[in-house]
Amino acid sequence: MANYDPEHHFEDELQCFRHEIDIGTQALYVMLIILSKASKDKLFINHITRTPYFWNTILNSLLTTQFIALGRIFDDNSPHNLHQLLKFTKRNPDIFTRSALFARRKGTGNPGIDWKEYANKAYEPIPKDFRRLRAHVKRYRAEYEVLYKDIRNKIFAHREILPTHADLFKHLEIRRLKLLFVFLAKLHDALCGLYHNGHEPRLKQQSYSLEKLLRKKGQRGNPTTIQELVVQDSIIFFQDLLSISRGSVTK
Image 1 (cartoon, rainbow, N blue to C red):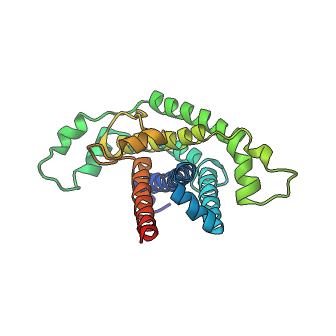
Image 2 (tube, rainbow, N blue to C red; image 1 turned 45 degrees about the vertical axis):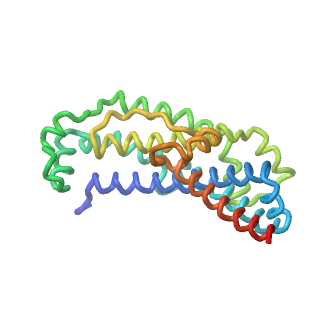
């Protein structure tokens, strides 16, 4: 291919990967916020009781989005799937070298940084690094195949007439679904940090518990992960919604 640039190809694939992670994670945590509110807030329960078709549509859309995103990430017939992304990293190790990092960063401005020195101190990955990441992916891919693939294919992507859909959902655990999406975000950050900043590709800890994310809101510091951002925005939205409703009730 005449103008093929492996770095641009990797950046595009990484961006596609990030997009699917973000829309799936946002859908999951907005759904969890709605269910949490529906179990505790009487005024919000009244909203749901008065407008059930609206909220059923919202919840169904959020659930569909999660499983469609997972399918795009894990299914081999998806044009931008995770397997293809990792296969590309294996075939193109040169884009992660110190010299490649220097070539990318030297033209990005910021004259206060000595990019040559920065690149010389950067981490240059070895095959073992990518094998470790692929081993993590293999474990989560197996979980997708067992727990989520049929739900995605037989309910959300292609509706099939089944005796019951309950059997497909009986092993579904919200905690494991949260862990899956957070793992994917950590994997993206590891690859992104390696490529753009020369950081060792480690899976750094991220909060996935809704309770912890709710407690974290209001603490000092800005949200940094997609789950923190979406929880923060959701809480603000429901505070505004219920504040308006309470004002209407008291008038």
